[in-house]
Image (cartoon, helix red, strand yellow):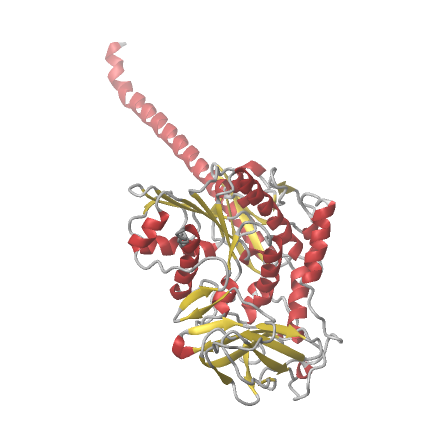
Length: 566
């Protein structure tokens, strides 16, 4: 037997090698199958995302989104009355006839203003301008509703102040300016939107609140899906994930992924902007250089000379309008409340913030303040949270001077690129987590991301924030709370559909009314951008930001009143 074994060695060797090759082939096949499976997952994911990208523009345009305003917790009877009052207070005059042709709409080039008999203009008095709106045929308008803004300025003095526009609802307007400095003052009057354009913007706000859409990424292992999200979603035969905040009742929904659970959501991000929102007829009222943010010129002179107030002065007319402040020599001068100080240099800012914890909540317009302080106060060292750029949360500390500076964005809706789901927090809940006290400063800015929704949505959000502010001040009255208002911004036909100054003005009026009488300080970004010579921008330039922060720091470190010696 042993003598035959050498004959079979090649056979056994061949069988062994064949078995080994077969095993290796199976392993490779299995690995290939696993890779194909993973690849199939990703292909499926891409298919879902592809479908979503095409379907994002196929949402039913006839769907009425006004019901979105009534989601969330039911307001009390008192809150419902307040909401009704607020909506009435911002009601906008309507044209007597809708659907007028463009030639009968407001034409800023043919409209004009005239300076009323100024008489002897002195500092401390007021200045009145009359405006006559005309259409493209050169005919006087017979109804109001145009959105006009005005300022009085002296370029040589870097001085400027906002004016107040009064609509007489007949095509005529009166603008009131306070006279706050001596010299030659010049009128600047701008039509932001015609009355016809405002009616279109109002329709979009009530009927197309999904014109900015949002999305969330869901992920589990290799599998991931992206679905649409919003405050409310069209009624489709598709299940929803409900992310309503349990503390405030603030609603938020996403379409449920096909193969993942709702608790696998990773992030929140802006999906994009819907296109083709206007008809051909409606588009006529949003033309840059024609009827969108266009100056109105004087029918005569556009400036007057203001003289210093006389020592013995007869009692003048009662001022129709008192602004929150004005610019002089490039510096903001508040007309009431705090004495404005200039915080030039990092050491002065550091000394003011010594021992303070500053919490900033809201949109990118308050994040801009955080970034300004970081850039101008090198003692503040940022802690790296590996947060997405321009999103946060951010934190900086100065351990030598015991300073803490934090920024966190507000909860949805928010049009940031990508926010981790775990970092999506509502301002009211954050305020409830603060101890408060004389070492605590709270800064809030929330307006820009609500411009596409019915005003009731913004009222509800502010109501929750107001409750939390009241709770904070009740437990620690020494807490300093500052609220930044909306500001004007650059507009073109497309951006007007989403970020019009008219939307911002409406929200701004609501915010001022809801926090009136509370122990909070308003940073009047609206007047501070309107009165300045810089072109309007969503994120104002450094000149304006430094004035805003000087105002904030002047509240943190007020001028101490000298005691009278007895």
